[in-house]
Every structure is written in C-alpha cells, then in structure tokens.
Length: 513
Image 1: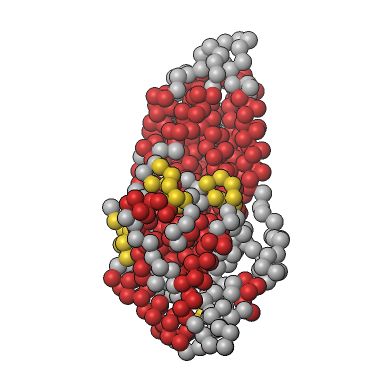
Image 2: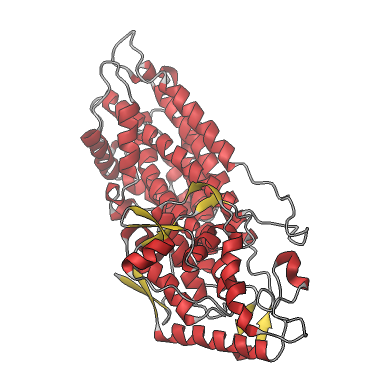
C-alpha cells in the first residue's frame, strides 16, 4: 500500500509501522509538493534580499558568525550553495557503533519525509523526491546508531543524507553497496544538493522519532500479551479479583483504571474466579492486588509517549523554518526533543515497576507456601522444576530496572559550548528498546510458569480469555514433567508474543493508532 503524505492524512505509529516493517511506500500529495516548492522559492528570495540565514549564508553551530557565501570583494555568491550543502551531510556523518536495522532506517526516512511535508524546511523538491525514492525503492543507507545527542539527530540523518550526496553505503536487496556504485547500477538519479538541502536532510529529530514509533509498537504488543499473562497468573494463583471490581475506579478515578480493570475482568469472564468463593484467600500479595493499578499506570505512560511521538510525526522541527505565508525565516528551537525524551523516561520507569510486579507474581506461583502448589512447580519430589529459572528472572529484572534509570540531564557541551544542553532523546529511546527486549523474556516466563501452575491446579474452570491463552501456550510448549532445559521454551514464547498473530482483537489494551 501507499501512504499519501498530506491531504489531511495524519501520520500515526501504525503508519510508520506499515512503512518500516511491512514495506508500504509513501507519496507526497500535490499540495505537499506545492508547499515544498513554495518554501524553496521563498528561501532564494530571502537570499537575494541579502538576509542572513543560518546554515545557508552562515556556518553552522559555532560557525554561525561566519558568512559562507561572501566573496573576497564582499559580494554574495549563491553559486557556492551546492558545495556548501553537499558538505553538510558529509561532515556530519560521524556515527559509530551498531548499524540501524533495515526497519529502523525506513522508520527514520519516513519520519523525515513527514517533517519535510510540513513545508517549512526550504528543501528543494528534487532533493525531497530523492529521499522519497530511496524509501520506495528499498535503498537503505547504513546508519550507525551512536552519535546523536537529541538536539537534531545530525549524525544518523547525515548518514542518510550522505547517500543522497552520492557518498556512503547502502543496503539494497540484501546486498551492501557504495552509493556511487549502486546509483550507477540501478540508474538512481542523485539530486544536486543546493539551497538548504544538506541542512534540511540532517537537521531534524527524525531518527529518534522513527525509532520511537517502532519501540511503541513493540511495547503495545508486549503489554497486550502481558495482560493475558496477568490473567493467567490470577487463574493459577486463584487470586481474589475484588481489586478488579468496577467500584474500584468509581471511588478513585485514576486515569486508565476503569479500562484496565474491565480488560482483565473480560479475560477472566465465565471462569470460576468470577464466582462467589472463587478466590483462595481474602487478600493476596501486592503483586497481584496492585496488578491492574500498575498496568493502568503503564497504559497512561504509553499514551503520553504515543502522543509525544505522533506530535513530532506531524510537526516541523526545522531550524531555521521557512514560512512564505508569514514572509519569515524563523530561527527556533523546535529541534529540542525534551518532551519526547521525558515521555519515554516515564514509560521506562512504568515498565520497570510492571517488571517488578511480574517477577514477584512468578516467584509467588513457585512458592509452595504462597500458592499452595508444589514448590518450584515440579510434580516430582526431588526434581528442580523451575527453581533455577528464578536466577534468570532476577537477572532480567535487574537489567530492566537498569535501563529504566533516567539519562543524566547534563551533557558535555559541543560546538564550542554553543550547544550546551541536549535532550539525549535518541539515547533514551534506544535504552527503552533494550528494556523491552528483556521485558519480553520476562513476560514469556510469566506465561510459561502460569500455564504450568494452572496445569498443577487440576480441574479448574478458566475464564474465556485465559482458556484461549493457556491453549496457545500449550500449542507451543509442553508442560514441565521431568526436569529439562527451559531456554528453548522461553525463546519460543518470546518470539510468539512478538507476533501480532498472538493476539485477538479483544486482547488489546493498548492501540498504536
């Protein structure tokens, strides 16, 4: 499918996901192309009028005090713009470390195209169309992930811009090429960068925003799967479901509480836990009693991060912004992504609290004194069962909490100390992604352990939703009878819950739009 940028089509997390992971293409609407052209025309009008424009007639960063178009006789020479704009991405392609995945690069390009479509960048239409062609033809620049400090993702985006400048490397149909060789091989028309093209390609937080969209999609999938794991843990523990009562939200209207408790009750509906005397005891450990409350907090943090990301997907973060309708070249700080970074910091902290409760629920299910089931959930006296799995649970929880710790608010100043603050948005998004990788294994373990505990309960009537979840697990993993390695079982479940096929429509607490 093709997503038309413009004509009232807002970009959502789902839009980026379709382009990045499912190979959808993008196109500019006619009105968007007109807006891009108008902005570029206005740029040259202001250059001809002698206006000083950051990054066009002046140097960048600490070089803002240098006029780059002025000749020795004091005249302005716009013919130099090609060399200047060509050099901008080349000089800023300084990323190091692990390369972005194919889908991450596609998400970055899609996010940048969305920003360009706002019509404030001053980019030439051929340069914008060339970036669009990279995406649609499946040409994926090699982008190292370390180098951005979150006040425009200069380094990662420069590795994309470098390719449009005819330099650097790209992946195409599974092979790695120099862009010079690839453009000749497939007759890809490289643009002549001019005007503000080089700066427009790199001066944006599109790398952080594109990656944020992918991380949010992963989190939604994972938390939706975990809702099922929580329900199955309730079944296995024979927990008291009174904390899920609609009255809880009526007497304390915490945002998201009503939706979360209703969702969990829906999974347990028609099971024995919903009947009078269904629970084993009056009050359970807090990891069970507070499960819905913590999940509601995760839901709200997710919504805030999604809103911050989608705001960026439908905004212009160019500096300077070219505004023909206002006859204005606007120096601004729209490249600052502090709001995005803080929303992901909050989401990471919420997920860490969720992980803490998850780990404790698993431990309680394994405890004979807490659950009333055989210790470590082995049916055979003297065997290990899931005992040593507790070490993996502890290690995963520590890793999750580590990556939830906030980034420092202090960053080493750069650009001769002109750039003396940074949001570190990309680093925050990246560490949240690593947190999610560990949390996925922890959720897989909760599913594995809860299913085993349900089996050991014997004849119990599960809820309609938890019955389906239990069967899904058993379709992938056999019950633990004799001691065996659980590593392959955990891996199988972790991969399964990452797939959209794991969930039905009624199992989605979080939506990506």
